[in-house]
Image (cartoon, rainbow, N blue to C red):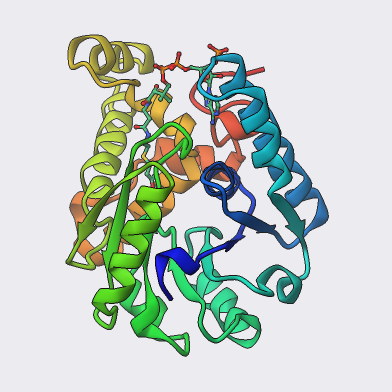
Length: 287
Ligand code: CAA
């Protein structure tokens, strides 16, 4: 597959990252098939894209015509076969669990066009292991966007053990077409580069509060105003989704050891399904 031949991108998963990536692809001029397992999920994802495009237009980042044209390029699906028909690139953005992702790829290989290139937006999981459940491990790599995709510049392009050079160059080119800056990650290790740094930061912030050494507000104001991060650690956890950070940590804990043990403050939020902005409350309230 050559970059100039890419016309249609299938995005599997319409959650926070899925709808954001679909929006970025549509803004770059690609036809987008946005798919999730329930009608309500895809409808919600589509509405989020509509909201976000409206916001970008309101802030003069794009004009109204661009917003309308991007939305027109997004089609929604529940049926996987229909979503994958004519797809040149398949971007998988389902929950951060190895078993779920493997089940999705088992089905994807049955329906995807033979020439299609597969990428995963996994935040931490092994690209090599995932690629091996497909029929094309050499045309499979990681394409890791950051939240919110429409505003974050970086994309990690991660090589699995079997990924060929042509695929990595294609996906780097695609990221650039989407207005992003791709960074190639050669070593397929848990959390890659950014999450290996960022997720322990969120976890450590939670341990500080858990141990009673400081409040959430003190940790956030210190990291934001004194250290100069764009968001406090707890604000960022709410932005990303506490469950997302937690699943990354669980995997890093399993693969890399004790230093990555998730703080109970995070697991409690996951159990109570207060996951941050997307559920209306997390460490802060958004309603
Ligand atoms: N689409 C459109 N508009 C959006 C939006 C979206 N998806 N998300 C937020 N906005 C809007 C807000 O509603 C707000 O609008 P109002 O002012 O009308 O309320 C506006 O954008 C804020 O934009 P500003 O440019 O004024 O704000 P900012 O300068 O603070 O930038 C930000 C916002 C870019 C999100 C910035 O805070 C930032 O960079 N935060 C850090 C995010 C980050 O680190 N992300 C990576 C997380 S790690 C990850 O994703 C990896 C993983 O695998 C877990």
